[in-house]
Amino acid sequence: MVQRREGGQLEVGRHRMRLVAHRGWSKRFPENSLPSLAAGVAAGADEIEFDLRLSSDGIPFLCHDAEVNRVSNLEGPTSSFTMQELKQADLKMPDGTVLEHLGFSSVDEVFQTFGGLIAMNIHIKDGSETGNILAYITERYDLRKYPEIYIAGDAQMLQVALEDYAFIPRCCLADAAKDPELLVDNAIKYRCARLQFRRTNYTKESVARALEAGLTPNLFYADDLDGAQQARDYGIMALLTNDIGYLKKRL
Image (cartoon, rainbow, N blue to C red):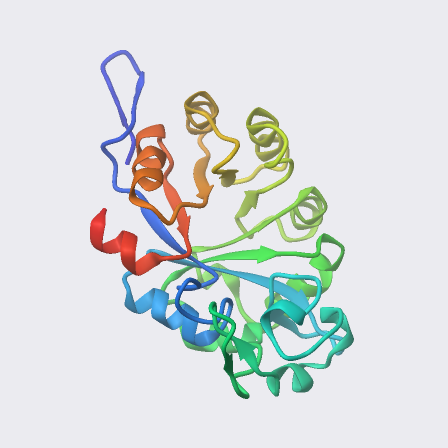
């Protein structure tokens, strides 16, 4: 952990930084797929991160984009497909080659495969669907039994979660792209346990302020050793990476 020197000052750079497999080992496997998450776990990730959206029949499934085109052979908005249709999709590897019938993964598959085995950073991509997504999950799984699960999202998501699902730890992403100090303000406002800085928009001062406020700072993201070492030197506690195997071996 981050240590304190005599006098109470924070001493950073000597702590063990947690590594988070961003969409699994997404540099090597189809992002947000069960194989990608499993590879991240096998490579030694401390946490897995994945994105959730809602199918047309109300089932949360793993997908980053608002449309499925980039990562599959399907075309159109994520919300226009049933879970059964999504399960029949061909998914794309990072190099664009296709894995036939791998299919999008449902949140149930993730919980049944990894629940209780590893920490989960669950990014709810559509804040307007937060209530539906969290209702689905909490009706099926007692999240109090999974102490290392937390949800991440924008201001809309955080507000709904704070009002109706306050027992689920929250990670603030609200205004991360604008101003790191505003991100800290929002994390405090929405009573978050964590916040997630962006690599293009964070400073030692903003990380130190987050730590002083009792927040755990994540960073999105670094795939290279220099970027990872800078994150640790700045006091980042959990680093998202697309290349978990590479950094796990070298840090």
